[in-house]
Length: 296
Image 1 (cartoon, rainbow, N blue to C red):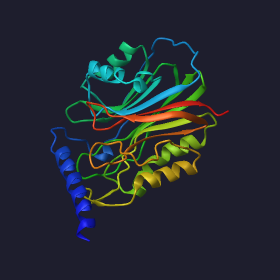
Image 2 (cartoon, one colour):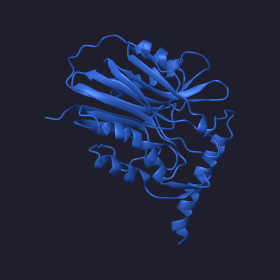
Image 3 (tube, helix red, strand yellow):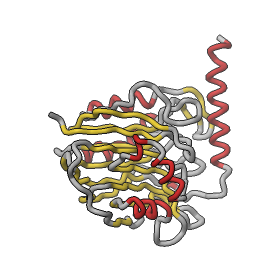
Image 4 (cartoon, rainbow, N blue to C red):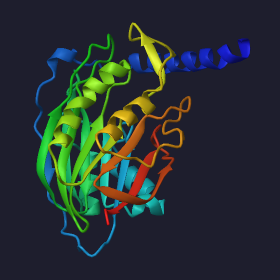
């Protein structure tokens, strides 16, 4: 019994240490009831040749990395990431002001179409949000406000950033999201529901990717982690019931700490021919990538 309990206790202690470190940061979040619409920033890139027969999509939590050079150099190190046609980026940190900073510079350097929307405005004026960078034009852009929960500490507003990419394999509806961490399974599914509702009305191929924060921890009082249900499997089952599929089902961790499976990419109306994960030097999340083709 001791041998069984010790790993669980260790995981809980590690999770609590991580939470304590996050709670001790200098940034102070607004209350969950203060979530308001923040203007979207968009910029057109260089028109790409539509000769490719597949689409490579990468999802990555930047862990607040703001240096365009560091991000570009890391992406260029790996063929799987260097070949990306579309980047879904989470935890995109921007300084106070009108522009998103490093991620916009990254898009300009790479000649990519660019969307950025802050999800949360911090008390110091800086912002955190989501970005989509695409080799192909982005149309029909929308920002979906997700339910906000009172997490006691470090509350955040959450959104999903969506657009249609006009690609060589057809029009693809992209949805980039970042869900809360210290919520119950029921709350996570509630936060995901607006995305599922939107996808249910679509006939075109859809890709939903990002940081789902699907840990197997339950947070007592929002602050004390204990072993909980496998949220990744339950969220996957809900998405599969809506017609989505994912190649990331092999229980390989996507987060450095405790082997957690927080990130994923789901597709509907397309097939994947290849997929994988890649460790990133500046992030505690792995980059996920998938190569897609139309359904035959």
